[in-house]
Image 1 (cartoon, rainbow, N blue to C red):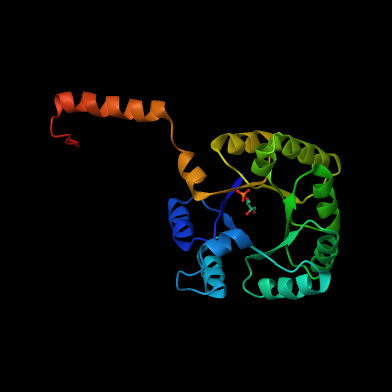
Image 2: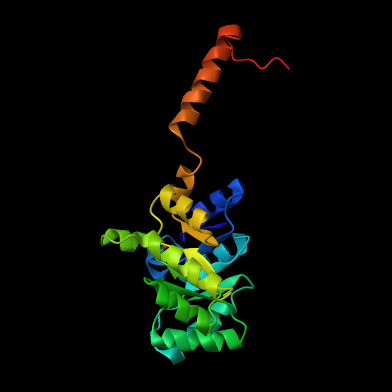
Length: 223
Ligand code: E4P
């Protein structure tokens, strides 16, 4: 399963890439707006993200009508070979996805909240579908259930569109995504940093080091 970072923050992406855990990035207008006022233009930030990320970077259009979505999508696709156009799940969006597929421009269809939306995006030619699990949990639904259903549908029909689990809030979302067989999870940086942690790991490490100090009080490693 690929791990993407769900951020527009260049420092977080650099750190994630150095850890060797980041395969790609997803941005959205909310995440981009958080970086505004830090001395770089939107265009500079996106170009830097594209340059430092080893894989796909989703950049979302903000137009809602087909013509303007297409204009913005073409601009995004010209930014770099790893640029993926993020298009919202609407009728105009589906039409744009079809046109972009014909031009071989990869699309991540965003704001998916039920399995049929994912099926339509796949039929239109999306490279990725982004179901938002956390926002479904927020309203009392089980977000991960739709990942399971999308996976079943895509297997049933041999659909190659990748399932990119979005709106992830915690490591359990990541675990359940992997068990279901999702292709990608996109994580806020704080969730990525939680993944390697376990209290028994910390406790075990402390005990090993305390025991070692009994024979080597300076903690020296005599090899
Ligand atoms: C997906 O690509 C979106 O950027 C993101 O996962 C939304 O998550 P949120 O519900 O935490 O805003």
